[in-house]
Image 1 (cartoon, rainbow, N blue to C red):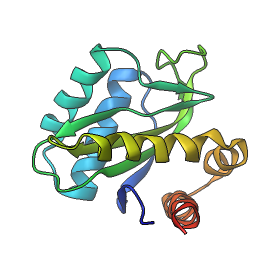
Image 2 (image 1 turned 135 degrees about the vertical axis):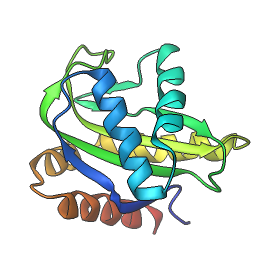
Image 3 (image 1 turned 180 degrees about the vertical axis):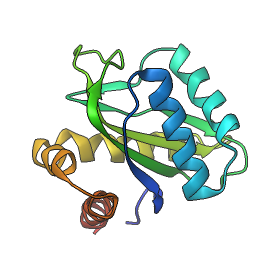
Length: 153
């Protein structure tokens, strides 16, 4: 089994956004940095999806996601927030970790499988704690890639 989404080190960041709009903008900028995408176009798609309902997963995690033209397979970005922020999660808790996912416009089941892979990753409290405790972008990237490689094996 292979990993269901790709991530680059440039798509991972430790950031200071204070609210949901700023979080989505920071996430769009990480997609731009990591994947060479237009940040404004990514932001527009993420905001469009978010208007349908919050992607706040719970337990301090949000998973904003959208379908996006021009990507060949599901791609991900990750933000660790220096200070938890309100995101409208179902459990009412602020978020500290934000996983973004963009999938090809025509992907049906691949998008759902990639979302499921991220949700499995963040269901594990120990993984969440390790990500929250990470002190560098490199450590965050390593923790995610190690976990997804282990799950794909």
